[in-house]
Amino acid sequence: MKYKISIALALLALPAFAGATEQAWRFRVYLDDKEIGYHEFRVREEDGLRRLETEANFEYKLLFLTLYEYAHENTEIWQGDCLAKIDSYTDANGDPYALKGARAEDRFVLEGTEGSAELPACVMSFAYWNPAFLEQDRLLNSQNGQFVDVEVGAPERVDLEVRGSTLPALRYRLEAEDLGIELYYSENDEWLALEADAAGGRKLRYELI
Image (cartoon, one colour):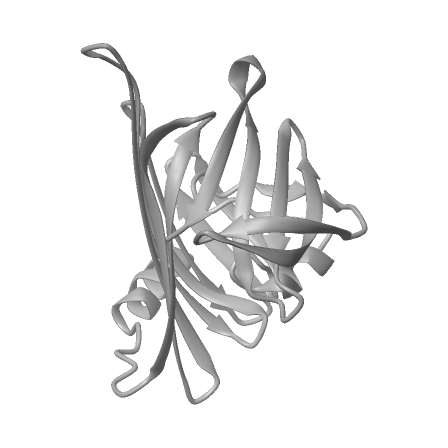
């Protein structure tokens, strides 16, 4: 019970970051060649802390029939490359997930729809916006709270079309259980695109707006 109380108090104290610098990424999301929604990330930084706010909304229709809907909202506070707090809610085609967590002493404590957990004090989520996450061998799933093993392959140089221009990019392949993701970054470590394996041999694609 004491961990639930400490998490609630920590989340109430999320900083406002007045006057902070901000970065933003907004992606159109496609399933193969069909646009199904968007995913937006905003990071504000001040005094060594970073606040991530992310929102995703997908809807896949066939003619007039909705086959899949997904909505996700997440707020994270970071101290350096360590997650300090998380508060997320997800509706995955009618299945709800809620997750709250905060660093407490020498651990990171989670409470969520799928139960509670205590993780190491310094953990990272799938922080695509921060290339440092590619150096991790375990990552926190911000939807269900699972702390999963991951493998990241060596980068491959490719050409990538971004906003109508062809740019040199580095492509990384990330594997986690049944998840396969390809991430694209500029030579200056700017996140440019994402592709993920989907059911039925399909591909989920993020294109930067």
